[in-house]
Image 1 (tube, rainbow, N blue to C red):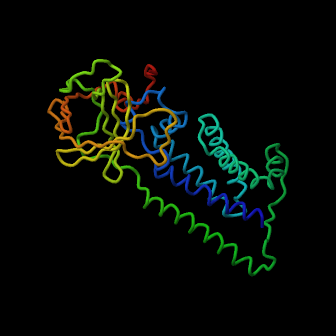
Image 2: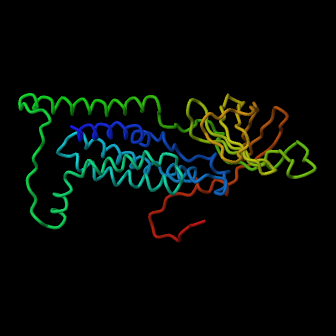
Image 3: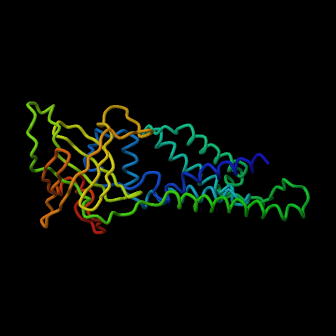
Length: 316
């Protein structure tokens, strides 16, 4: 009975993480807004999230692995396979959490140990199989001693578990839909080439806009935005295209151990924007009037295509 309770607890625990990765909700997708953040400005966790977000395939496969390990726990006959798979998958997650300082280290360790405990009863048979020795037949335990009742409950419980598994996927897929590509031509990474605002006496006091990045992946009609000012300050936020206007909501300047939990916008601007035939972007309003052009070097990561052939390595 304890084995069944442990399997049920593990299945419920991996649902949110597994489906979250499958629907690209946990790490999201790397976006133009990431282009203005230098490696040194990222936290270790942020660096790991960017790595996972760059490849949706890796993120989805990681989620499928966690979900497969969980669903295999439903049946006692396949539970040991789920235990082995889950202990390896969650062991890797624990290692990443430790080395990238993700604050769920204890949870991932507990899950990895839990999956290992599920596989423990079959460890002897696995060891004999691995060493080439004959193994005994599988004897399925009967928590319910009445055979007729057991024949019914074994399928009822498994069916309910599958309903919970699928229901969690439907619920998360509905509430947390994958990001959609923006239909606006505004997304891109731009470097400011002209600004009507006069420069400050000192560079450290110069708050003029130097580089801007409009994200291409939308959620609830908004996408990510980043701003690099002339004095080096970096601000993140969200923007919402509204025809010829765009509303930009900015969080406080990036500094120190800022968490993304409970963040509030520090300021908002509404600008009129126009994109010329040559890709020149003009922004005006709220005391700003500037011209910017797309910078291919700042978006090289996003424009670099896939190559199957043995081309020279581009490791920049």
